[in-house]
Image 1 (cartoon, helix red, strand yellow):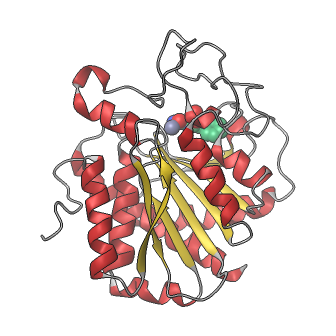
Image 2: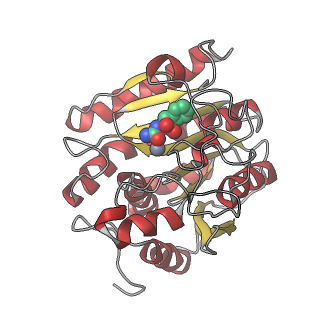
Length: 306
Ligand code: ING
Ligand code: ZN
């Protein structure tokens, strides 16, 4: 296919291939697809995503990011699958009469490429930033957001896998997402962050067992999305707040999106890992993509109904 490798079931794409695929779509589907660039990663990679829009001012929008954690490969592949369906499935086009959708397939491309390059690095989670003072490389970007930063479930040790960083938003990747979401403030109604693994649909808060005021709405949307997803091949998700369902961890992007960026509904989506955890086989790319897309359509309906 012109423009390089398109999403497939044979292997996980490299970051340059994801980028090339998005650039191709911006040309072949220029009627609905434009690229958005949030800035650069620590090592200088462009933080690029696709914006689906039929134009119009300040339409309500859905925002999806993936791959903030390097080793969670099924997250970027699912984001790319969703981009493909939105661009190529003729049934998708009507969605954009009412809403816009942003999809950023890799929020930590430095870490992702590090895990792609060598088998020994396959389980890397963090960014690849280096500090003059720290003995170790990288920060857990999902502990780096400025909402109750570093208060629970995070570490001050630069060598820890859950290192919160020297300060909130020390990482260019977290800062880029913050600045982008602030630049489109008021339009994003639903925020989704793709992780793996475990089949959880988690909502705030990650720093307290107390529930957000709109917990009923968060639960209701998640239950409808989960019901649609599970119809595809029986995959079931557990729904609840991060603290009460999985574990407490402050500084996550979903807490910041809801607590500080004024987004009504924010979720961390823990995609399935099957029996392989962080390293499912490439044959999972399409089945996981397909079922997740059903959930995305439900969240899109929520955005429309706001
Ligand atoms: N899980 C998430 C993590 O960052 C999470 C779970 C998200 C907890 C948000 C609290 C708040 O640890 C993975 N797989 O990374
Ligand atoms: Zn993760």
